[in-house]
Length: 295
Ligand code: MG
Image (cartoon, rainbow, N blue to C red; front, side):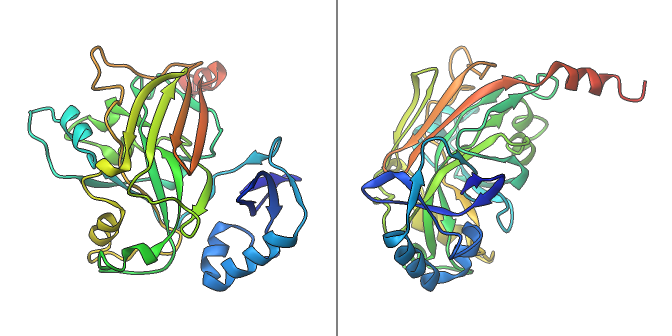
């Protein structure tokens, strides 16, 4: 998704021509529309992409591939063994957790992330492989699971640890701050994506590598996540799933590390793409405004 003349538009990158965008406005208004159009929509998109004129990717503002999924982002916690170990506060490695993130947390691939110290001082990073569901389904077997994947994207499950770890565990709130979750830079459709069981994941802060993992170390791989998440719970077309992060997050380091204004994160999944996000401080007037409300 990209911005053109002030409006969001659907476009495609083609293998071998990744510096050019072909407009797919003739197929669908947005990615959810393309997913709803099913196999026929994809065929039409492929035909248009083969012949249409393109515009340079450079200089275009990219938007979140999906900004209003049909429900919260579904997310896996502790889905990599070493990350499960680094977060095991009582020495006990627990099974993976499932939680959700509010859709208002979704941000674009290169958007700034605003930190407001009156809300959280402990903002942390998590590189993840994201996936988009292609078709409605419940009780999906592991064998059928991959046919329910529309495609893959990169996601940074930015987390406010002080909120997340507050009074009994508050994953939803701690992982749902407004526009804190960069996604994209695009969705690689399942037919063109590399094997999701062997993708390198890397996150750097100011060029320093903090996370360096591989999806082969997932406790529950993609097909198992879909089987488990869909048990008695319908997954809708366009649903977004965050598959968990490897070790190397900030709050488990000695001493703990968190993000500060001016920091730049690069979040990469090999064969999918790279997100780049700068941390900025909340505007002083916004804070002043807030503190004087009602005065
Ligand atoms: Mg996560």
